[in-house]
Image (cartoon, rainbow, N blue to C red; front, side):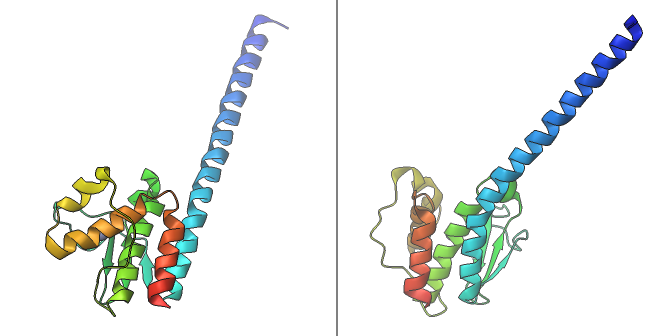
Length: 166
Ligand SMILES: [Zn+2]
């Protein structure tokens, strides 16, 4: 084998290994993504069963920080918007759990968001998220943030929907 052929063979091998690496990382990325998505889809399905519409679209309103929120719920139309960016950020489930709590609050108030019977206290680190709201809205948001940070947040959200929307 002359030097030139050897060189070409080596560079071919190098490219093959790069391509194999790229394909395997894509496969692993997909696995992680679909794993995260199955819980999301489960909660989305439950919300749909209770008459809520879940849209994976940029929310139509801006929040009190002047930004498009990660999630939004309209209690009158029972519509939930999940900003598609949360799938890239990896917090889609937490955002849907948050909005699911608002959905349960809507059921509890017969179409108007109202406080749930919740035996959980907001963890200290969640305070900045709801302290920017005022009065009743602050308590409403405190419940949503409290649930979304629990290790078993999905199960709690489902239970709250069952208790209030059935
Ligand atoms: Zn909220």
